[in-house]
Length: 412
Image 1 (cartoon, rainbow, N blue to C red):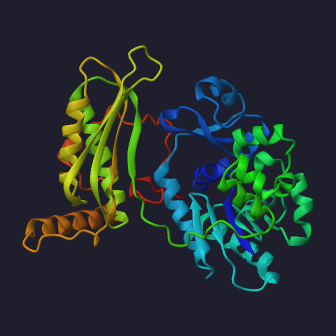
Image 2 (spheres, rainbow, N blue to C red; image 1 turned 45 degrees about the horizontal axis):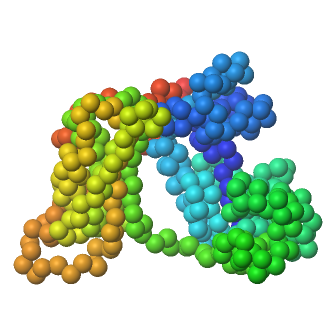
Image 3 (cartoon, rainbow, N blue to C red; image 1 turned 90 degrees about the horizontal axis):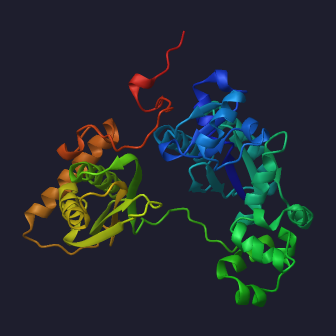
């Protein structure tokens, strides 16, 4: 059996941990630049507010409902996610972190201990982090995902989908709610008379191969109880790293764009160093407002002389590329940096007499260690140290209560 541990209304739960006065208050969390609702508490969902709704359209309605609204606090969410995953991993079973608020577990003991294991995980995660979770068990990852959804409505937050009840449950699940199907594919299946997860599980393999994809075929096998989706217990390093955000206000001058590109390059290099890799190519891109008449989007990729994770060697080409694609007189809405041609530190055959490369590696590692211990902005490039009028708008941002001393809440 495979288990799925899923945090309930994760972003909203994170905001409530240090605000006990919000325990029964509707909570909404907004997307970048406070644009749309991306997460809600169960109370707000019950009141009919839809995920993805533009904030400016529902602002008055949220106020009438007494909703606490927050900008996305990614630093807080990621830190609490790391803590939740640490607690789940402490139970000793193999764990695959699937997303910021979900993890698959692969229990090695007898099936009879699963419900007790699920209850223990829920209790310990709540005790040590304050985050509520539900736990579902099934014979495959896809069945575990379905069990996880059902577990959210169980009194004890745990649901065991055993082989004897699979068909009964699959008949009650809409095909659009099956992991990996999605709205577009579901419309096609509806047209073919396939409406439930059970209907999908009974489809012939050759029909799926002909009309859909191999991924869908694996989903069908999983619904039948055949373990077909690989276990990713030790994720491979990413082969491409993107760092980009839309600006909170339009940017017209090159110097401000340069500051943004330097920040994005720094963020991308940090991710590169975390997986102990180096990059061979740097891409920089810019984009104006998509719905304006003078829409402009362009990018430029520059190949580096040799693989590197040394920030100055990446910033230089990125700024050179920006200079080439920048057009005076336009108002830019977005820019970004993409690193590609990524490989491990030990994959490049260097020059025996190239002492400068070894020094750069040591410098990059030293900077990464300092940033890991004291914060990513404790050491930064001079070009990124000025004020940032282009940064993401987050007017309702809560404190980083687990990672910043000055944000620790007072207790009395």
